[in-house]
Length: 167
Image 1: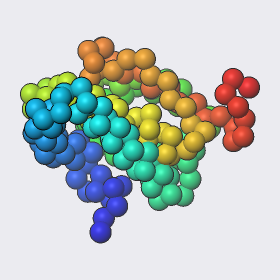
Image 2: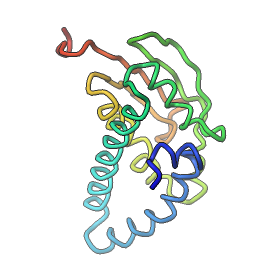
Image 3: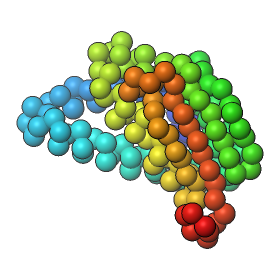
Image 4: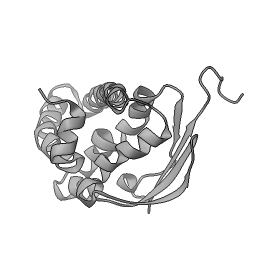
């Protein structure tokens, strides 16, 4: 059986998200009709976060490390098929700052007629993926293209293991 990382490498994350969305969107609508939209989206969001956290752990294991260099190398899968256009602002052993200036994921969800699900199914993963990839990795992001901003601002910080927040 292929791992998540192997699937992403073979088909690309953009194509994978499109396939998933075509299956998930009708399920979301069916569950929303039965138990309400808010509760359905809450369950979907929680489940997606759990999946992303597990994928982060799996990918760090497969990469043989969970630092900024491995994170940067992993980001190639997210960009496959020109899925993202990015500008790197800073990259070091403890910092990885970049902006996404074009997001074909957002474009794809809009074309599928489910732009409101895009954040839940894709952007929602980012923080949890980082937690799984490395518990000492912190992501700060204040805006996304998916939610109407002109760009996404990703700001990763890797704190020293054992060091507390703010110290």
